[in-house]
Image (spheres, rainbow, N blue to C red):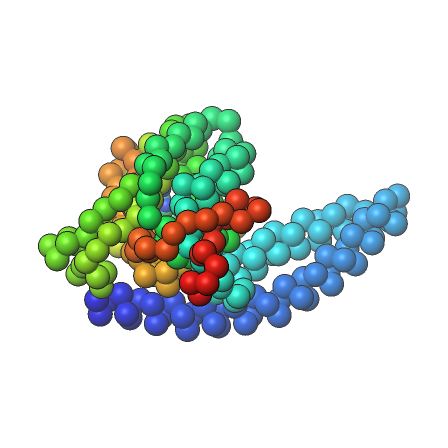
Length: 260
Ligand code: ADP
């Protein structure tokens, strides 16, 4: 519990710092990118065309990085609402399939009738995307990615209670891959912001820290089960809410009117 509190506080102050820098940096990058685009467009047959393209490429990479920093800092307004996790998974499934590439297959096993969870839909999508990207990176030669959901009763003896969860009904989302797996030292540091084993320029070390921050903020927890050479399962528990699920025009679950 204390570990969780310390970790959350560290995440928060790091997030504030990173978010502030990323925000200002992103504005500067936008200007640089804008002018580089002008040069690429208008100077196509000048000696500077190739140089300008290099600026554009590096600038876009920088911009991606600041977006990851911003996601980690979670400076956007959080709008938690009762969500059907199966529905959210269904909505991002196509995007995930595209981002993992053709050599990796995606399967889902979703249990019907789960209680709603109260979370920001955009953030929950971010969690799934980050985990899918990690799974992809762990399966360079191909493999299988599975997303499954279920209902878990956390009782007093459950290991998650030691991490500060209250006993009760939780919705579990598991993202499993058949990739490289993680040695113990990597598992131990995986949630640390900026911890990465990926080559410089490829990993930011913010993926799992972002996942952790989002899930803990929603009252849940994240566990890593991994075996080198076999694969990795990231298991997320989110408290089940007793809110009834109704869906709006966009198919999102919303709380029935008159219940706050
Ligand atoms: P990044 O992906 O940018 O390195 P993360 O915080 O998402 O940052 O992950 C931290 C590290 O944890 C990764 O560099 C990798 O070593 C390890 N990792 C995360 N997910 C997986 C996975 N599914 N399989 C194997 N290793 C993983």
